[in-house]
Amino acid sequence: MNASPQFGFTPGDILVVTGAASGIGRATAHQAAGAGLTVAAWDLDGDGAATTVAEITEAGGTALAVTADVSVAEQVDEGFARSRELGTVRYLVNNAGPSSAVELDFDEALRISVGSMRRMVETFLSPAPTGAAVVNIASVAGNVIGTASDWYCASKSAVAGYTRHLAAYRSHEVRANSVAPGMTDTPRLAGFASSEVGQRALERVPLHRMGTPEEIGWAVLFLLSPLASYVNGVFLPVDGGWTVTQ
Ligand SMILES: NC(=O)c1ccc[n+]([C@@H]2O[C@H](COP(=O)([O-])OP(=O)(O)OC[C@H]3O[C@@H](n4cnc5c(N)ncnc54)[C@H](O)[C@@H]3O)[C@@H](O)[C@H]2O)c1
Image 1: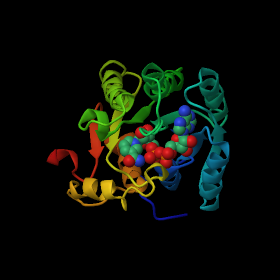
Image 2: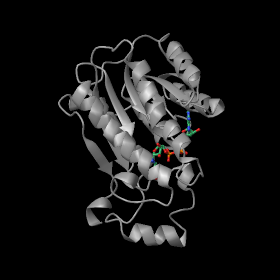
Image 3: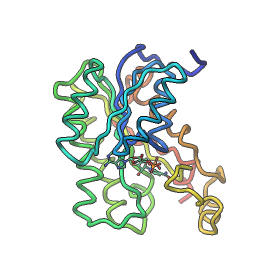
Image 4: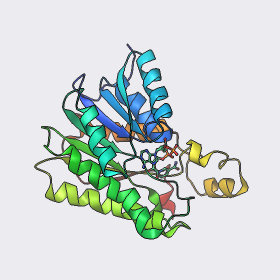
């Protein structure tokens, strides 16, 4: 089918990726399908999720589009019911989250950003499948670097903290890690690299460029995979070295 790395996954095992219509989620869905996983591609943008699925199918992979807003409890329940029609869901990538540029009420933003990830995990682990693994998408913002929006920093720190909770207290059910992207070239940062602010920011990144969604996706897939079977509770920055220079 392709020459993608297989990461030791059992072909046909099922992965749910949220925010799979765009950016990091879309790339991860493609890469996971290339590694032999069956992908439930979730997004509130149903047309976008369907496009991702059509592309995966065209490339020879197996995927299902699920239209769901992860911040709405009923939609999470329905999304898992649909995804489980494929079989046991063994892997979860909690990627969906609002852009830091959006103005949101602080409490509501935390509910949407990190409350939704917790709800996804609780539903995913009811009941817990054998060999379960989750990767939550945090950010270097909040954990290392401040951002203008208070809720974004706070919620991404919370994602990392929640992941550590899972790793420490739910290890009998799931292996949990977080990936913290640096500046990544996705639609939400369109035009950033060529802007004055962007150029100044990228000067401070040792690799002097943004990351690609695929460069984030490879890290996500590794942590999810059996190759990372003894990796539990890490917070992995994938940021071109940005944070070590701060
Ligand atoms: N791009 C970056 O530089 C960057 C840096 C650090 C962290 N991140 C994080 O990575 C994740 C993905 O970001 P991206 O840049 O790929 O974004 P993106 O805007 O390209 O894609 C996000 C996708 O998530 C979907 N989505 C948003 N809210 C949703 C919800 N409630 N339910 C279901 N789907 C929803 C959107 O429809 C969209 O398709 C986010 O959690 C973001 O905070 C991104």
